[in-house]
Image (cartoon, rainbow, N blue to C red; front, top):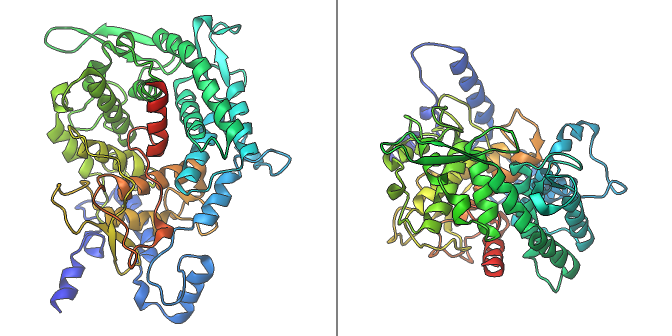
Length: 477
């Protein structure tokens, strides 16, 4: 009886559904979201034989006696590879024309999760990816690299920080593959990065936007534009920091005023907005934290607090983004759960948890136990190094495996939404971070660990596998 009462008050149970004193559109949408998630939070052991057989047919259970929900690896892999096939093999639906200016993003959103799933495409496909990214390169003057250039969203479009980040990450992934198994693809990817890095730096410098800072001494701060004459926001700062640090072009000139600008984007809530005085947002908070982590390391600053960030309010804002019933994260206060924030907020918390430490981004995994919904809980039996990540990992993994997985492959925002490449990428990235960051002592148990559900370790700052980051650092630094 005591055990039953205790379970009733566990986070993720109906006791943690939203409560309010006045009904509004916001509260109605929250109730609707909780209702659409509720059917997925069923106790696996309590299911009848027919229901278990149905889950086995879908691939969500390995057999009728199992109580562990499975990651649909093969189905996700098949779905993700659709974006990478040549058009004579399989065409995307006509609706994808809306993503014509996001070609490098589509490559990254599918190649990275395939890498996490250890489902790497064949070499001809990888070579085709490199050639596709190369034709997305655009020079500022339209002639040569003398004035710099960057990757655009599609052929003949403007160079832009966002697709440039996606292209550099995708090329870094390919360049770091086994050169003996993928000799042409790895060489082509590495050669393209080496040829374009100097031009990329020149273009990045041209995007600087200096101003007098909102600080006591009025020192200069510098934001960056997303593209020439484009908007200034913290996404650009992160995209530049990430690509520049991988390629070893993060120069003093590029960094001047950068850190100070990011710090000014912290809001009264504790999170970061896209620019000073904007609303705190999970995606922008990740960008700000990841950029600050890169910049503090590059500048020899001991930790984030020394950079001027209010860590107390930041930590408070981040941990309150996890939904107590659904288990996933919301991106802003009073918003709905969304699977993509598994990484944007989960990754930000991981960076914060690693602040000021030299702890490894290890690829070990936790020992595990199971909750009644059949989701593996990652735990550490010998936790002398600290409490781990500052969110409820069991609930996040429950949300990803039960609510975000489409049984036909691919992952989604929430059960009522369709699958897409973007949410597939960031759900799996968040799951990887939850499993692997701060896991140096956590090794798989042969008796308990279900290897099917374990993903490769994604670096919480760059969001490519740790091995790929190490390759880039060893090659360019």
